[in-house]
Image 1 (cartoon, one colour):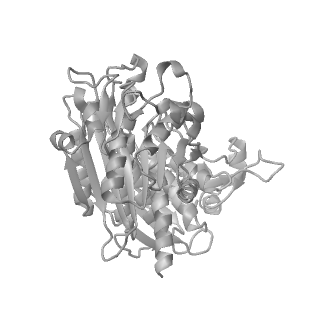
Image 2 (cartoon, rainbow, N blue to C red):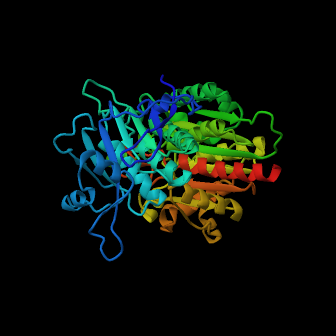
Image 3 (tube, rainbow, N blue to C red):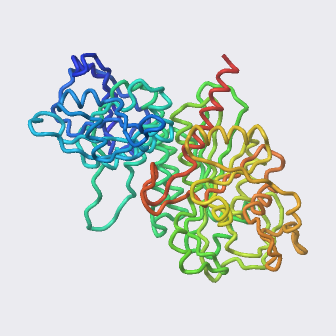
Length: 540
Protein backbone atom coordinates (compact mmCIF):
# COMPACT_ATOMS: atom_id res chain seq x y z
CA UNK A 1 0.00 0.00 0.00
CA UNK A 2 1.44 3.31 -1.05
CA UNK A 3 0.57 6.42 0.99
CA UNK A 4 -0.78 9.56 -0.57
CA UNK A 5 1.60 12.47 -0.90
CA UNK A 6 1.34 16.19 -1.59
CA UNK A 7 4.56 17.80 -2.77
CA UNK A 8 4.44 21.52 -3.43
CA UNK A 9 7.01 22.38 -6.05
CA UNK A 10 7.93 25.93 -7.05
CA UNK A 11 8.35 25.74 -10.77
CA UNK A 12 11.33 28.02 -11.09
CA UNK A 13 11.42 30.32 -14.11
CA UNK A 14 8.61 28.97 -16.24
CA UNK A 15 8.35 29.49 -19.98
CA UNK A 16 5.64 32.02 -19.18
CA UNK A 17 8.23 33.94 -17.07
CA UNK A 18 6.36 33.48 -13.79
CA UNK A 19 6.64 31.16 -10.84
CA UNK A 20 3.96 28.51 -10.43
CA UNK A 21 3.00 26.49 -7.39
CA UNK A 22 3.08 22.89 -8.56
CA UNK A 23 1.56 19.96 -6.67
CA UNK A 24 2.53 16.39 -7.49
CA UNK A 25 -0.36 14.01 -6.81
CA UNK A 26 1.18 10.57 -6.47
CA UNK A 27 0.07 7.01 -5.89
CA UNK A 28 -3.08 7.39 -7.97
CA UNK A 29 -3.41 3.82 -9.17
CA UNK A 30 -3.96 2.20 -5.73
CA UNK A 31 -6.24 5.01 -4.56
CA UNK A 32 -8.86 2.71 -3.04
CA UNK A 33 -6.25 1.22 -0.71
CA UNK A 34 -4.62 4.45 0.38
CA UNK A 35 -4.45 5.72 3.93
CA UNK A 36 -7.13 8.03 5.25
CA UNK A 37 -4.92 11.13 5.63
CA UNK A 38 -4.32 12.39 2.09
CA UNK A 39 -1.68 14.96 2.99
CA UNK A 40 1.40 12.96 3.86
CA UNK A 41 3.95 15.78 3.87
CA UNK A 42 5.40 18.56 1.77
CA UNK A 43 8.83 19.28 0.39
CA UNK A 44 10.61 21.56 -2.06
CA UNK A 45 12.34 20.61 -5.28
CA UNK A 46 13.05 22.40 -8.55
CA UNK A 47 10.72 21.69 -11.43
CA UNK A 48 12.22 19.66 -14.25
CA UNK A 49 10.76 18.13 -17.38
CA UNK A 50 12.50 14.83 -16.72
CA UNK A 51 10.03 11.97 -16.67
CA UNK A 52 7.03 14.08 -17.74
CA UNK A 53 5.45 12.20 -20.65
CA UNK A 54 2.14 14.08 -21.00
CA UNK A 55 1.37 17.81 -20.96
CA UNK A 56 -2.35 18.67 -20.85
CA UNK A 57 -3.66 22.00 -22.13
CA UNK A 58 -7.16 23.34 -21.39
CA UNK A 59 -9.31 24.20 -24.40
CA UNK A 60 -12.71 25.94 -24.08
CA UNK A 61 -15.35 26.68 -26.72
CA UNK A 62 -14.97 29.99 -28.50
CA UNK A 63 -17.01 33.09 -27.68
CA UNK A 64 -20.77 33.25 -28.37
CA UNK A 65 -21.39 33.55 -32.08
CA UNK A 66 -18.18 31.76 -33.00
CA UNK A 67 -18.26 28.49 -31.05
CA UNK A 68 -16.43 26.64 -33.83
CA UNK A 69 -13.17 28.43 -32.97
CA UNK A 70 -11.68 26.90 -29.79
CA UNK A 71 -10.21 29.11 -27.12
CA UNK A 72 -6.97 27.89 -25.49
CA UNK A 73 -6.88 28.36 -21.74
CA UNK A 74 -4.45 27.43 -18.99
CA UNK A 75 -1.34 25.63 -20.17
CA UNK A 76 -1.50 26.99 -23.70
CA UNK A 77 1.26 29.57 -23.19
CA UNK A 78 3.56 26.96 -21.68
CA UNK A 79 2.91 24.61 -24.61
CA UNK A 80 3.37 27.38 -27.16
CA UNK A 81 6.70 28.49 -25.73
CA UNK A 82 8.10 25.02 -25.08
CA UNK A 83 7.11 23.49 -28.40
CA UNK A 84 7.05 26.58 -30.60
CA UNK A 85 3.50 25.95 -31.80
CA UNK A 86 0.31 27.95 -32.25
CA UNK A 87 -2.02 26.04 -29.91
CA UNK A 88 -5.20 27.76 -31.12
CA UNK A 89 -4.45 27.15 -34.79
CA UNK A 90 -3.58 23.52 -34.22
CA UNK A 91 -6.70 22.92 -32.14
CA UNK A 92 -8.93 24.54 -34.75
CA UNK A 93 -7.29 22.61 -37.59
CA UNK A 94 -7.86 19.36 -35.71
CA UNK A 95 -11.54 20.12 -35.19
CA UNK A 96 -11.28 20.52 -31.43
CA UNK A 97 -14.31 22.39 -30.06
CA UNK A 98 -13.48 22.60 -26.35
CA UNK A 99 -16.56 20.64 -25.34
CA UNK A 100 -16.31 19.27 -21.80
CA UNK A 101 -14.64 15.87 -21.81
CA UNK A 102 -13.31 16.12 -25.36
CA UNK A 103 -9.63 15.34 -25.77
CA UNK A 104 -7.14 15.12 -28.59
CA UNK A 105 -3.69 13.56 -28.26
CA UNK A 106 -1.15 15.51 -30.31
CA UNK A 107 2.34 14.38 -31.21
CA UNK A 108 4.79 17.22 -30.49
CA UNK A 109 6.83 18.69 -33.34
CA UNK A 110 10.32 17.50 -34.16
CA UNK A 111 13.07 18.91 -32.03
CA UNK A 112 11.11 18.45 -28.78
CA UNK A 113 13.63 16.15 -27.16
CA UNK A 114 13.56 16.42 -23.39
CA UNK A 115 9.96 17.66 -23.34
CA UNK A 116 6.78 15.71 -22.71
CA UNK A 117 6.27 13.21 -25.52
CA UNK A 118 2.53 13.81 -25.78
CA UNK A 119 0.37 16.91 -25.78
CA UNK A 120 -3.30 16.60 -24.90
CA UNK A 121 -5.83 19.25 -25.80
CA UNK A 122 -8.46 18.83 -23.09
CA UNK A 123 -11.96 20.27 -23.48
CA UNK A 124 -13.18 22.01 -20.32
CA UNK A 125 -16.48 23.38 -21.66
CA UNK A 126 -17.96 26.18 -19.61
CA UNK A 127 -15.76 25.20 -16.64
CA UNK A 128 -18.74 24.43 -14.46
CA UNK A 129 -18.11 21.78 -11.85
CA UNK A 130 -19.84 19.18 -14.00
CA UNK A 131 -17.76 20.15 -17.03
CA UNK A 132 -14.56 19.94 -15.00
CA UNK A 133 -15.48 16.49 -13.68
CA UNK A 134 -15.94 15.33 -17.25
CA UNK A 135 -12.64 16.88 -18.27
CA UNK A 136 -10.85 15.16 -15.40
CA UNK A 137 -12.35 11.79 -16.30
CA UNK A 138 -11.40 12.24 -19.94
CA UNK A 139 -7.82 13.08 -18.98
CA UNK A 140 -7.57 9.98 -16.77
CA UNK A 141 -8.65 7.69 -19.61
CA UNK A 142 -6.45 9.42 -22.20
CA UNK A 143 -3.37 9.05 -20.00
CA UNK A 144 -3.78 5.52 -18.66
CA UNK A 145 -0.39 3.89 -18.34
CA UNK A 146 1.48 7.20 -18.21
CA UNK A 147 4.20 7.78 -15.64
CA UNK A 148 3.86 11.52 -15.11
CA UNK A 149 1.34 14.11 -16.33
CA UNK A 150 1.71 17.86 -16.05
CA UNK A 151 -1.24 20.24 -16.27
CA UNK A 152 -2.35 23.71 -15.21
CA UNK A 153 -5.98 23.09 -16.21
CA UNK A 154 -7.31 24.18 -12.79
CA UNK A 155 -4.78 26.89 -11.93
CA UNK A 156 -6.62 29.90 -10.48
CA UNK A 157 -9.96 28.14 -10.10
CA UNK A 158 -11.87 27.85 -6.81
CA UNK A 159 -11.14 24.92 -4.48
CA UNK A 160 -14.58 23.52 -5.32
CA UNK A 161 -13.82 23.62 -9.05
CA UNK A 162 -10.44 22.01 -8.51
CA UNK A 163 -12.04 19.32 -6.39
CA UNK A 164 -14.53 18.57 -9.18
CA UNK A 165 -11.72 18.16 -11.72
CA UNK A 166 -9.73 15.86 -9.45
CA UNK A 167 -12.81 13.80 -8.59
CA UNK A 168 -13.43 13.33 -12.27
CA UNK A 169 -9.82 12.28 -12.79
CA UNK A 170 -9.87 9.73 -9.96
CA UNK A 171 -13.29 8.36 -10.86
CA UNK A 172 -12.63 8.21 -14.59
CA UNK A 173 -9.48 6.20 -13.96
CA UNK A 174 -11.31 3.49 -12.03
CA UNK A 175 -11.45 -0.01 -13.45
CA UNK A 176 -13.43 -2.87 -11.96
CA UNK A 177 -11.51 -5.73 -10.32
CA UNK A 178 -10.66 -8.48 -12.80
CA UNK A 179 -10.03 -12.21 -12.60
CA UNK A 180 -8.49 -14.61 -15.08
CA UNK A 181 -5.38 -14.61 -17.25
CA UNK A 182 -6.14 -11.88 -19.78
CA UNK A 183 -4.19 -8.66 -19.56
CA UNK A 184 -5.67 -6.06 -17.23
CA UNK A 185 -6.30 -2.54 -18.57
CA UNK A 186 -3.48 -0.07 -18.18
CA UNK A 187 -3.54 1.58 -14.74
CA UNK A 188 -4.02 5.26 -14.02
CA UNK A 189 -1.06 7.58 -14.46
CA UNK A 190 1.32 7.28 -11.54
CA UNK A 191 1.80 11.01 -10.89
CA UNK A 192 -0.01 14.15 -12.00
CA UNK A 193 1.65 17.53 -11.43
CA UNK A 194 -1.02 20.18 -11.04
CA UNK A 195 -0.23 23.87 -11.07
CA UNK A 196 -1.90 26.07 -8.46
CA UNK A 197 -3.67 23.22 -6.68
CA UNK A 198 -5.12 24.02 -3.25
CA UNK A 199 -4.47 21.20 -0.75
CA UNK A 200 -8.07 21.09 0.52
CA UNK A 201 -9.28 20.39 -3.03
CA UNK A 202 -7.12 17.28 -3.21
CA UNK A 203 -8.04 16.11 0.28
CA UNK A 204 -11.78 16.32 -0.36
CA UNK A 205 -11.48 14.79 -3.83
CA UNK A 206 -9.58 11.85 -2.37
CA UNK A 207 -12.19 11.27 0.34
CA UNK A 208 -14.99 11.24 -2.25
CA UNK A 209 -13.05 9.08 -4.70
CA UNK A 210 -12.01 6.54 -2.04
CA UNK A 211 -15.66 6.19 -1.06
CA UNK A 212 -16.85 5.80 -4.65
CA UNK A 213 -14.10 3.26 -5.40
CA UNK A 214 -15.08 1.23 -2.34
CA UNK A 215 -18.75 1.25 -3.35
CA UNK A 216 -17.87 0.31 -6.93
CA UNK A 217 -15.49 -2.46 -5.91
CA UNK A 218 -18.06 -4.09 -3.64
CA UNK A 219 -20.87 -3.75 -6.16
CA UNK A 220 -18.80 -5.10 -9.06
CA UNK A 221 -17.73 -8.19 -7.11
CA UNK A 222 -19.41 -11.34 -8.49
CA UNK A 223 -22.22 -12.81 -6.37
CA UNK A 224 -20.46 -16.14 -5.76
CA UNK A 225 -17.93 -14.08 -3.78
CA UNK A 226 -20.05 -11.20 -2.50
CA UNK A 227 -22.35 -13.16 -0.22
CA UNK A 228 -23.95 -11.54 2.84
CA UNK A 229 -21.23 -13.06 5.02
CA UNK A 230 -18.46 -11.72 2.73
CA UNK A 231 -19.87 -8.19 2.66
CA UNK A 232 -20.19 -8.29 6.44
CA UNK A 233 -16.49 -9.22 6.60
CA UNK A 234 -15.59 -6.32 4.28
CA UNK A 235 -17.58 -4.01 6.54
CA UNK A 236 -15.62 -5.23 9.54
CA UNK A 237 -12.36 -4.56 7.68
CA UNK A 238 -13.45 -0.99 6.82
CA UNK A 239 -14.47 -0.41 10.43
CA UNK A 240 -11.17 -1.74 11.76
CA UNK A 241 -9.17 0.47 9.39
CA UNK A 242 -11.04 3.61 10.47
CA UNK A 243 -11.53 2.83 14.16
CA UNK A 244 -15.31 2.46 13.86
CA UNK A 245 -17.70 0.39 15.95
CA UNK A 246 -19.12 -2.60 14.10
CA UNK A 247 -21.68 -5.27 14.94
CA UNK A 248 -22.94 -8.16 12.79
CA UNK A 249 -26.18 -10.10 13.17
CA UNK A 250 -26.02 -13.70 11.90
CA UNK A 251 -29.12 -15.64 10.77
CA UNK A 252 -29.85 -17.12 14.20
CA UNK A 253 -29.69 -13.74 15.90
CA UNK A 254 -31.81 -12.10 13.20
CA UNK A 255 -34.53 -14.71 13.69
CA UNK A 256 -34.34 -14.53 17.48
CA UNK A 257 -34.62 -10.73 17.55
CA UNK A 258 -37.56 -10.53 15.15
CA UNK A 259 -36.02 -9.41 11.87
CA UNK A 260 -38.72 -11.24 9.95
CA UNK A 261 -38.22 -9.44 6.65
CA UNK A 262 -34.52 -10.22 6.39
CA UNK A 263 -35.08 -13.78 7.58
CA UNK A 264 -37.84 -14.43 5.04
CA UNK A 265 -35.97 -13.00 2.07
CA UNK A 266 -32.81 -14.95 2.88
CA UNK A 267 -34.60 -18.21 3.69
CA UNK A 268 -34.13 -19.79 0.27
CA UNK A 269 -30.37 -19.31 0.07
CA UNK A 270 -27.48 -21.38 1.38
CA UNK A 271 -25.86 -18.02 2.14
CA UNK A 272 -27.77 -16.80 5.15
CA UNK A 273 -28.74 -13.15 5.71
CA UNK A 274 -26.80 -10.69 7.80
CA UNK A 275 -27.32 -7.22 9.19
CA UNK A 276 -24.31 -5.02 9.81
CA UNK A 277 -24.12 -1.86 11.88
CA UNK A 278 -21.06 0.37 11.45
CA UNK A 279 -20.95 3.51 13.61
CA UNK A 280 -18.72 6.57 13.58
CA UNK A 281 -18.70 8.62 16.79
CA UNK A 282 -16.82 11.93 16.86
CA UNK A 283 -14.02 12.00 19.40
CA UNK A 284 -14.39 14.53 22.19
CA UNK A 285 -17.70 15.92 20.91
CA UNK A 286 -20.95 15.90 22.84
CA UNK A 287 -23.76 15.51 20.32
CA UNK A 288 -27.34 14.32 20.14
CA UNK A 289 -27.35 14.54 16.35
CA UNK A 290 -27.43 11.06 14.83
CA UNK A 291 -27.70 10.30 11.13
CA UNK A 292 -28.51 6.72 10.16
CA UNK A 293 -27.87 5.51 6.61
CA UNK A 294 -29.70 2.32 5.63
CA UNK A 295 -28.60 0.33 2.58
CA UNK A 296 -30.44 -2.39 0.71
CA UNK A 297 -28.01 -5.28 0.31
CA UNK A 298 -29.51 -8.01 -1.85
CA UNK A 299 -26.32 -9.77 -2.92
CA UNK A 300 -28.12 -11.52 -5.77
CA UNK A 301 -31.77 -11.22 -6.70
CA UNK A 302 -33.20 -14.11 -8.67
CA UNK A 303 -36.69 -12.87 -7.82
CA UNK A 304 -37.23 -15.90 -5.64
CA UNK A 305 -40.32 -17.95 -6.45
CA UNK A 306 -41.56 -14.94 -8.45
CA UNK A 307 -38.64 -15.66 -10.77
CA UNK A 308 -37.12 -12.93 -12.91
CA UNK A 309 -36.78 -13.40 -16.68
CA UNK A 310 -33.36 -14.42 -17.96
CA UNK A 311 -32.42 -11.02 -19.37
CA UNK A 312 -33.03 -9.37 -15.99
CA UNK A 313 -30.71 -11.68 -14.05
CA UNK A 314 -27.09 -10.58 -14.78
CA UNK A 315 -27.31 -7.06 -13.31
CA UNK A 316 -28.80 -8.43 -10.11
CA UNK A 317 -25.36 -8.93 -8.58
CA UNK A 318 -25.56 -5.15 -8.17
CA UNK A 319 -28.76 -5.22 -6.14
CA UNK A 320 -26.62 -4.62 -3.05
CA UNK A 321 -25.38 -1.25 -4.33
CA UNK A 322 -27.25 0.65 -1.61
CA UNK A 323 -25.42 -1.20 1.15
CA UNK A 324 -22.06 -0.52 -0.52
CA UNK A 325 -22.89 3.18 -0.76
CA UNK A 326 -23.80 3.61 2.90
CA UNK A 327 -20.67 1.73 4.01
CA UNK A 328 -18.59 4.05 1.83
CA UNK A 329 -20.35 7.09 3.30
CA UNK A 330 -19.65 6.15 6.92
CA UNK A 331 -16.00 5.59 5.98
CA UNK A 332 -15.95 9.13 4.58
CA UNK A 333 -17.64 10.50 7.71
CA UNK A 334 -14.74 9.14 9.74
CA UNK A 335 -12.15 10.62 7.39
CA UNK A 336 -13.89 14.00 7.45
CA UNK A 337 -14.39 13.79 11.24
CA UNK A 338 -17.89 15.23 11.09
CA UNK A 339 -19.10 16.47 14.50
CA UNK A 340 -22.07 14.11 14.83
CA UNK A 341 -22.75 10.40 14.93
CA UNK A 342 -23.18 8.51 11.65
CA UNK A 343 -24.32 4.89 11.45
CA UNK A 344 -24.56 2.66 8.39
CA UNK A 345 -26.98 -0.26 8.52
CA UNK A 346 -26.47 -2.88 5.82
CA UNK A 347 -29.46 -5.19 5.32
CA UNK A 348 -27.89 -8.18 3.52
CA UNK A 349 -29.62 -11.19 2.00
CA UNK A 350 -29.59 -13.31 -1.14
CA UNK A 351 -33.03 -13.75 -2.75
CA UNK A 352 -32.73 -17.30 -4.05
CA UNK A 353 -34.99 -20.26 -4.65
CA UNK A 354 -34.86 -23.16 -2.23
CA UNK A 355 -36.99 -25.57 -0.26
CA UNK A 356 -37.42 -22.98 2.49
CA UNK A 357 -38.04 -19.95 0.24
CA UNK A 358 -40.73 -17.51 1.26
CA UNK A 359 -43.80 -17.57 -0.96
CA UNK A 360 -46.50 -15.28 -2.33
CA UNK A 361 -49.28 -15.43 0.24
CA UNK A 362 -46.99 -15.73 3.25
CA UNK A 363 -47.47 -13.37 6.18
CA UNK A 364 -44.19 -11.95 7.49
CA UNK A 365 -43.83 -10.21 10.85
CA UNK A 366 -41.28 -7.40 10.63
CA UNK A 367 -39.04 -5.97 13.35
CA UNK A 368 -41.60 -3.48 14.68
CA UNK A 369 -44.35 -6.09 14.76
CA UNK A 370 -46.11 -5.00 11.57
CA UNK A 371 -47.33 -7.98 9.57
CA UNK A 372 -46.96 -7.95 5.80
CA UNK A 373 -48.72 -10.08 3.21
CA UNK A 374 -46.31 -11.15 0.47
CA UNK A 375 -47.67 -10.63 -3.01
CA UNK A 376 -44.45 -10.96 -5.00
CA UNK A 377 -41.17 -12.41 -3.73
CA UNK A 378 -39.35 -10.18 -6.22
CA UNK A 379 -40.32 -7.16 -4.11
CA UNK A 380 -37.83 -8.29 -1.51
CA UNK A 381 -35.84 -5.09 -1.10
CA UNK A 382 -38.60 -3.27 0.72
CA UNK A 383 -38.87 -6.17 3.16
CA UNK A 384 -35.24 -6.04 4.28
CA UNK A 385 -35.40 -2.24 4.41
CA UNK A 386 -38.56 -2.41 6.54
CA UNK A 387 -36.66 -4.34 9.22
CA UNK A 388 -33.62 -2.08 9.08
CA UNK A 389 -35.65 1.15 9.16
CA UNK A 390 -37.76 -0.08 12.06
CA UNK A 391 -34.63 -1.08 13.97
CA UNK A 392 -32.99 2.27 13.27
CA UNK A 393 -35.97 4.27 14.50
CA UNK A 394 -36.67 2.16 17.60
CA UNK A 395 -33.15 1.43 18.78
CA UNK A 396 -30.90 4.22 17.48
CA UNK A 397 -33.24 7.25 17.83
CA UNK A 398 -31.83 9.09 14.80
CA UNK A 399 -32.24 12.78 14.00
CA UNK A 400 -32.45 11.76 10.35
CA UNK A 401 -32.57 8.46 8.50
CA UNK A 402 -31.74 8.01 4.82
CA UNK A 403 -32.20 4.76 2.96
CA UNK A 404 -30.45 3.99 -0.33
CA UNK A 405 -31.75 1.20 -2.53
CA UNK A 406 -31.90 -0.18 -6.04
CA UNK A 407 -35.56 -0.61 -5.30
CA UNK A 408 -37.82 -0.33 -8.35
CA UNK A 409 -37.65 -0.59 -12.10
CA UNK A 410 -40.40 2.01 -12.07
CA UNK A 411 -37.94 4.67 -10.88
CA UNK A 412 -35.65 3.90 -13.82
CA UNK A 413 -38.55 3.87 -16.29
CA UNK A 414 -39.71 7.25 -15.05
CA UNK A 415 -36.36 9.02 -14.64
CA UNK A 416 -33.93 7.12 -16.85
CA UNK A 417 -30.33 6.18 -16.06
CA UNK A 418 -28.99 9.54 -14.86
CA UNK A 419 -31.27 10.57 -11.97
CA UNK A 420 -32.17 8.80 -8.76
CA UNK A 421 -35.65 9.19 -7.32
CA UNK A 422 -35.93 11.26 -4.14
CA UNK A 423 -38.72 10.81 -1.60
CA UNK A 424 -39.03 12.14 1.92
CA UNK A 425 -41.31 13.29 4.72
CA UNK A 426 -39.31 16.32 5.91
CA UNK A 427 -39.03 19.51 3.79
CA UNK A 428 -35.76 20.63 5.40
CA UNK A 429 -34.14 17.26 4.81
CA UNK A 430 -35.40 17.16 1.22
CA UNK A 431 -33.87 20.58 0.58
CA UNK A 432 -30.57 19.43 2.07
CA UNK A 433 -30.45 16.38 -0.22
CA UNK A 434 -31.26 18.46 -3.28
CA UNK A 435 -28.42 20.83 -2.38
CA UNK A 436 -26.08 17.86 -1.93
CA UNK A 437 -27.10 16.53 -5.33
CA UNK A 438 -26.19 19.84 -6.93
CA UNK A 439 -22.86 20.02 -5.09
CA UNK A 440 -21.84 16.43 -5.83
CA UNK A 441 -22.99 16.12 -9.42
CA UNK A 442 -25.17 13.12 -8.57
CA UNK A 443 -28.63 14.33 -9.62
CA UNK A 444 -31.93 13.60 -7.91
CA UNK A 445 -35.53 14.19 -8.91
CA UNK A 446 -38.15 14.47 -6.22
CA UNK A 447 -41.25 12.33 -6.55
CA UNK A 448 -44.35 12.66 -4.36
CA UNK A 449 -45.61 10.46 -1.57
CA UNK A 450 -49.23 10.28 -2.75
CA UNK A 451 -51.62 9.41 0.10
CA UNK A 452 -54.33 8.46 -2.38
CA UNK A 453 -52.28 5.40 -3.37
CA UNK A 454 -52.14 3.95 0.13
CA UNK A 455 -55.27 1.85 -0.44
CA UNK A 456 -53.10 -0.33 -2.68
CA UNK A 457 -51.20 -1.47 0.42
CA UNK A 458 -54.32 -2.76 2.16
CA UNK A 459 -54.48 -6.45 3.05
CA UNK A 460 -57.36 -8.59 4.26
CA UNK A 461 -55.03 -10.89 6.20
CA UNK A 462 -52.19 -8.67 7.47
CA UNK A 463 -51.47 -5.10 8.52
CA UNK A 464 -50.07 -4.30 5.07
CA UNK A 465 -49.54 -5.69 1.61
CA UNK A 466 -46.13 -4.84 0.17
CA UNK A 467 -47.21 -4.64 -3.48
CA UNK A 468 -50.39 -3.64 -5.27
CA UNK A 469 -52.88 -6.38 -6.22
CA UNK A 470 -52.11 -7.99 -9.58
CA UNK A 471 -55.30 -6.72 -11.16
CA UNK A 472 -54.95 -3.16 -9.88
CA UNK A 473 -52.85 -1.96 -12.84
CA UNK A 474 -52.26 1.18 -10.80
CA UNK A 475 -48.76 2.17 -11.92
CA UNK A 476 -46.66 4.38 -9.68
CA UNK A 477 -44.50 1.50 -8.51
CA UNK A 478 -41.70 3.68 -7.14
CA UNK A 479 -44.19 5.80 -5.20
CA UNK A 480 -45.96 2.77 -3.77
CA UNK A 481 -42.66 1.28 -2.59
CA UNK A 482 -41.77 4.56 -0.86
CA UNK A 483 -45.20 4.69 0.79
CA UNK A 484 -44.61 1.19 2.13
CA UNK A 485 -41.23 2.16 3.61
CA UNK A 486 -42.71 5.26 5.21
CA UNK A 487 -44.82 2.96 7.40
CA UNK A 488 -41.64 1.91 9.22
CA UNK A 489 -40.07 5.28 10.12
CA UNK A 490 -42.69 6.37 12.67
CA UNK A 491 -42.51 10.07 11.74
CA UNK A 492 -38.71 10.33 11.98
CA UNK A 493 -37.26 12.74 9.39
CA UNK A 494 -36.60 10.36 6.52
CA UNK A 495 -35.30 10.24 2.97
CA UNK A 496 -35.64 7.40 0.48
CA UNK A 497 -33.27 7.31 -2.51
CA UNK A 498 -34.19 4.86 -5.28
CA UNK A 499 -30.97 4.48 -7.27
CA UNK A 500 -32.12 1.68 -9.60
CA UNK A 501 -31.50 3.83 -12.69
CA UNK A 502 -27.99 5.21 -12.13
CA UNK A 503 -26.54 2.21 -10.28
CA UNK A 504 -24.52 1.09 -13.35
CA UNK A 505 -23.45 2.12 -16.83
CA UNK A 506 -22.86 -0.17 -19.79
CA UNK A 507 -19.81 1.79 -21.00
CA UNK A 508 -17.53 4.54 -19.72
CA UNK A 509 -19.73 7.63 -19.31
CA UNK A 510 -18.13 10.84 -18.03
CA UNK A 511 -16.84 10.18 -14.50
CA UNK A 512 -18.57 6.78 -14.36
CA UNK A 513 -16.54 3.79 -15.53
CA UNK A 514 -18.21 0.74 -17.04
CA UNK A 515 -20.03 -1.27 -14.40
CA UNK A 516 -21.14 -0.10 -10.98
CA UNK A 517 -21.15 3.68 -10.55
CA UNK A 518 -21.14 3.98 -6.76
CA UNK A 519 -23.94 6.50 -7.26
CA UNK A 520 -24.97 8.01 -3.95
CA UNK A 521 -21.59 7.91 -2.19
CA UNK A 522 -20.53 11.41 -3.27
CA UNK A 523 -24.08 12.63 -2.73
CA UNK A 524 -24.14 11.45 0.89
CA UNK A 525 -20.67 12.86 1.51
CA UNK A 526 -21.82 16.27 0.27
CA UNK A 527 -24.84 16.01 2.58
CA UNK A 528 -22.69 15.08 5.57
CA UNK A 529 -20.18 17.86 4.86
CA UNK A 530 -22.92 20.50 4.65
CA UNK A 531 -24.52 19.24 7.86
CA UNK A 532 -21.12 19.30 9.55
CA UNK A 533 -20.50 22.88 8.41
CA UNK A 534 -23.83 23.99 9.89
CA UNK A 535 -23.12 22.18 13.16
CA UNK A 536 -19.70 23.80 13.49
CA UNK A 537 -21.10 27.22 12.69
CA UNK A 538 -23.75 26.85 15.38
CA UNK A 539 -21.17 25.99 18.04
CA UNK A 540 -18.58 28.56 16.99
